[in-house]
Image (cartoon, rainbow over all chains, first blue to last red; front, side, top):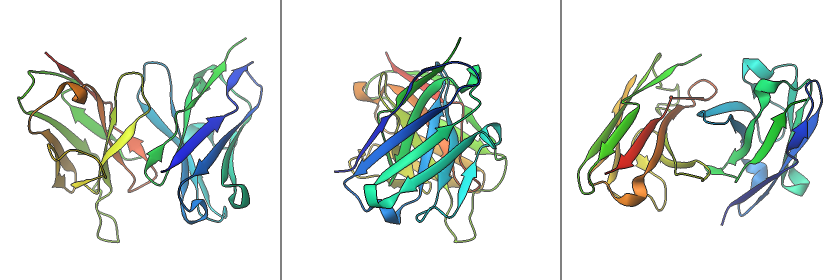
Length: 112
Length: 111
């Protein structure tokens, strides 16, 4: 059974940084593109970005380019999202999505 | 950016009756590989989203047969043949022809 478990969310001040992690199990992690999708309170999902199987390609939504970076460690079956220069509008539940499954999400709140 | 537009934005359905949601994309979702990159996603109240249908009409494992996806190019439809109480939630269409974008969502309530 596929499991995706996010962690690392919390309260951060505007301009701050946060690193999210996603632990994957139940499938061959190294063979799959992985995605981060976020959902602001009361809003629909918004794709943040993704990374290919070996980490050599990344794509991002325009609003996070230059501020967020996705990486992965296939040896640890883990996906990461480094978020810098955080803004209030980055406040959302962040989901790890891969192999057609979604994690339970981790809440990031950007506020002073 | 490919824009996804859903109608209606809300739907109230009597149990046992059918429901239909339309989704239109601003560009064709037909990929060079011959596959049309249109998904349907359901988010039940208080839960994470989950994929229901991929490539227009293919149900994921465990998705009931009452869910049917159809369409091509830029026009797509999700039909629920007989709505049940567990179908309550927000339905999103999603494309991954170019990156990923989601529709605004259709909130389905059961009367």
